[in-house]
Every structure is written in structure tokens, then in C-alpha cells.
Image (cartoon, rainbow, N blue to C red):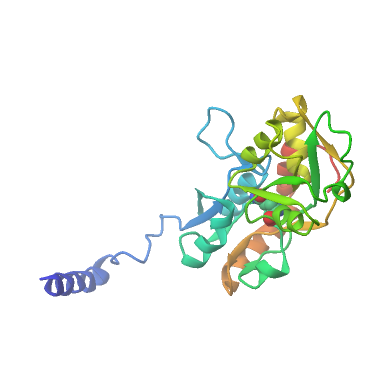
Length: 257
Ligand code: GLN
């Protein structure tokens, strides 16, 4: 039964192809889709404004601008940060734009675009914290991080520290607020935004110097040179035509890049 159905389908499709193109091939007017994966608790790069279903942020604006450049329809797919690379490899998304740092380990599994944002890690503690002045004071302490991030990797290197991993950055910050941990290790622009605009300054502060020097890249499936080439071309064009600067200013003001 199944066999004959698929045979019929194949015949219909073969005939259809002659007439109008059966599936697969898109009509000229239909835009191809670029499925972009991200984790949405990383403001101001990707997040949902309170009460909004829309995904907002620097990466989201950049992804949409790239889509426009490539004449592709951008579809944002939300998931856990540690699920992004597996999803890319499984083919359920085409690219990752999620404040993802280009690291040698990740580069073994995915192909990164040219860097699009300079970043680094920092330490956030409670407002009334006196003892912890920076990462060197975190030995033997309890630290909250987001699972699968460079912050988690760095925290695991600290002698005697207990690292508590959360799915969302918002949960890590809440754990700090509730006194469950002494510090959070996370990306500096995200901590800074949280303290300025995310309600963090009521109970938290940033301490010490920038811990690491990192760069974000858009990831595609390992070896997808065609897509990464297109992304790089679009990025270069957006930098040239001022669109990148415009998006940057929206989220970071006049700060130096
Ligand atoms: N830049 C960090 C990393 O790549 C954190 C990214 C994130 O939490 N979205 O691991």
C-alpha cells in the first residue's frame, strides 16, 4: 500500500515537475528561508521585551539585516544555548546568531563567520559583596553560569569552585539575588546591560577587570562554505553601508567597538 502510494506520488511529481516544479524548487517570488537559532536570555543581543513575543536585540537586527541583504526570509528559532550546535548539526537550523564566541573547540564542530562583535567575560556579585573584587577571589566559591558557555568553561578552571549551571542567564542572576551563589560569570556587555537596564543594579554590581578577550561569530554547519561565504559578504556590505553602525548604536550607543 505504502509502496504504491509513493510510486503514485513520484509519478505525479515527475509530471508536476514538467508543468510547475513539484516541491523542492521554489517559485521565483517565494523567498528562501534562513533558520537562525538563538537562546533568548542574552540581552541586549537576543531577548524578549517584557510582554512581547518578538525577539529583539543586536543579533536579531543583524540577522534580519543579513537576511535582507541575501534576499532570504529570516526565521528565528529559540532554544537552549547548549542545544544550538547539536541543532545546527542535525539540520534543524541553518545558522546560529546567539552571542556565540569563536573558540578553537567549537571551530572543530562548526564553521564560523568573520567576527562581528568583540566581547569578554566579567564577574557579577551582590551589591553588598566586599570580599570578591574579581575573578581571582572566586577560588572555593559557588558560581552560577549558563550551561555550555565560555563563562561556564572559565568558571570550571577556578580552583575549588563549585559551578552551578543554569539553562538561562536569567536563572543564574536570580540565584545570585537569592544568595544561592556568590558570583555569576558571564559576558561583559550582557552584565553591563543587565545592571543598566535589566533591573540588576538593585542588588548586583560588576567587579574586576575583563577576564577574557572573545569575539562573536555566526556559526553554520561545518563545511557549509557557501552559506558562510554569503554571510561574510553580507556582513562586509552592512559594515560598508553604515547599517552595522546603525544597529550597533541602537543597542550600545556611542561605545567604542
Ligand atoms: N559568548 C558566550 C559563549 O559563547 C555566551 C553566549 C550566550 O550565553 N549566549 O559561550
